[in-house]
Length: 157
Image (cartoon, rainbow, N blue to C red; front, side):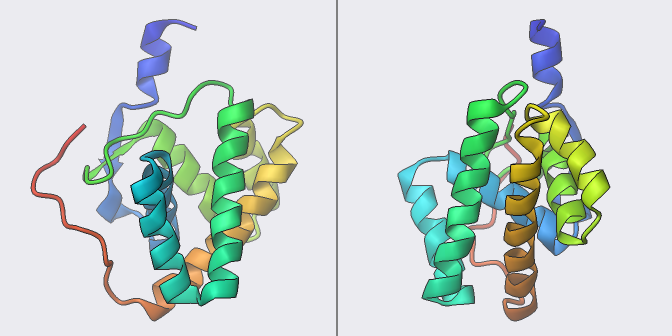
């Protein structure tokens, strides 16, 4: 793979504000999960506060497994923008649309998008995880009118 093809995954293709709550949540929590232990603690706090300990733990496990499978079996590393960046990268847009399709029950579309992220034999596993995660994000969006995250001071790439 050329360096140019790898960089395309991070190319800005839109803004987080253009996404629905499930899709935006998927990108935000992907960014946070990949940002390290402190950010992962924020994910747990959000999930447990919004969903309760039991459902929050389940959502956390789904996110963790989804991220791990993407990392271990990805076609290439997923490119992400900084947690506070307002931009939406190409890989993030793919991930967001994948989670959205899985959540909406569009299994064939989700399977197709999953093969853009991971090897085809792993795709069914991540579709199930994405659907469960997306349903949790949908419940969170219904119960939490505003995000508890810091607002960015500036756009960072």
